[in-house]
Image 1 (cartoon, rainbow, N blue to C red):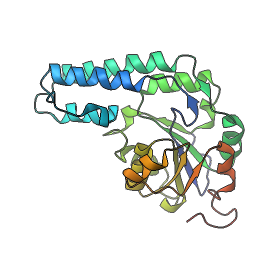
Image 2: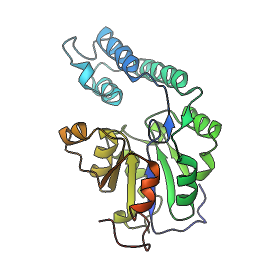
Image 3: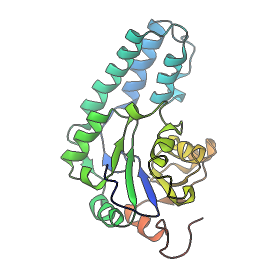
Image 4: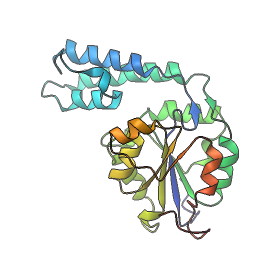
Length: 228
């Protein structure tokens, strides 16, 4: 990460279905994780696994008294295999390059993804946008996955001189919104499900359907009125 660039604002992007149209089969991922949890006594068969995210199922396993390094590695290996399969040939969301290129000249840009770092870096290099981010923060840098704000805090610690109020998270899911809110930064929902957001008490600064709308939200400190 370059430490030469000095801006008064930062924008943190989720990756899957925010910048990349990935084909990761999260339903399959959850089924595989649930099967591993049950098979190894890390949860009961009665667990309503379909109402949990993959990251929540992983945390259930990690918090179990029966977890071992070997079992945790099996969980991560299963997840990584499905991620790699789904991210192969991923394409960018419309207008991503133009929007990111503009924002890159005015703010610190980060990726925050629950995916493995190697898979995320490969996908972002293949789509030609990796160089626009100061760091790709993946699960290896977090103490717990989103919706935990661990990754948000990791990023904010990189620039203690940037006011917390000047940071924004952009993502498509309630887990992004919860991480942002619990990390005390603003949240913009991109193609987010409003009913799902409200069910998880996520209150975005804005709902947008086109990445170009980010350019009119006054997310850059010192340019126009404050966004809140």
